[in-house]
Length: 399
Ligand SMILES: Cc1ncc(COP(=O)(O)O)c(C=O)c1O
Image (cartoon, rainbow, N blue to C red; front, side, top):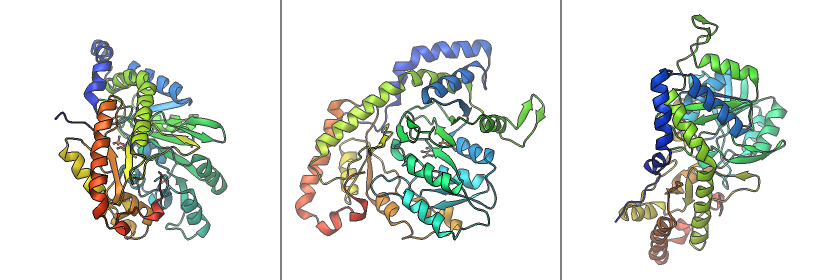
């Protein structure tokens, strides 16, 4: 039986190969391997795509977040409010900047940071550090934008910066007071990862920061390049966090196809939702004020391990994003959080299952995934202890 992949980068490569080969020939000719015309062109093209004034290419999403916080002068004694349901890099960047990550729970319907929980923490006023909060760092989890209108309003009220972790949200859109905008352009700074498996993925490590603020853009551009203001003059202690020309060439080719690929992802999500509607699963749905780019298609069920085992047995790849919320990671034990601190995040981590999702997935493959899930649901139904089988009511019916 042919394996169904979670993501299929080889299929993407087939589409872009000729274009990238031509670009590589040019790079080998002019030998501008770090920075140079490819990087500058990608920065311009991605800025146009996002509808933002500045894009600064960097060497990873983690660096994008870290340099953003540094550019905002966020460091020791400062807090950054974020979510426990994310990849650890979000909090690594905060800690690398010297600041303290403050976690608040997610909204059980969206799995994204809860504006109500942010507000509660701020209103409470009992902060973890001397300076208190300086920024909110929402993550657009699975490609579905966080509630940016509410988050921006809270940030304005408390004079906080907003650094968006858009590492999973290339091309997603969200409603703001300025109208609908691309994820990563709704806050002060937007951070992107181009890790190969992302909707817009490089052939190695890469990332970018997007902003309309010229001063912050200049500061990030300096920090990524050893704090350089001219070849051997350095205004800051910076980093080697530059974007390679080879990665920029791949990203330029993929950027041209991003909207088409995201459209296909959305069509696949619609098909999954239609075909799975009758099963006892929590399905992802776009909230009214956001349009997901479906980096991942994540379902929820208390018996997700049974579904997962059946899929793997049927040669269908699947994943769990994420099995351990950040407050329970031993790497973050010094933050002082405990089991039970964020019940919605814990319920999400215990029930999520990511199905195959990529633009080259066929309708036939989607149908095969659905068939397996359907079989498990039917076999499991009579024997299920319903109290245990139900997803916690706190998690709700739809994401
Ligand atoms: C939500 C989130 N934040 C940050 C990162 C870090 O990006 P990178 O791996 O490019 O450093 C990722 C990448 O997986 C991510 O998914």
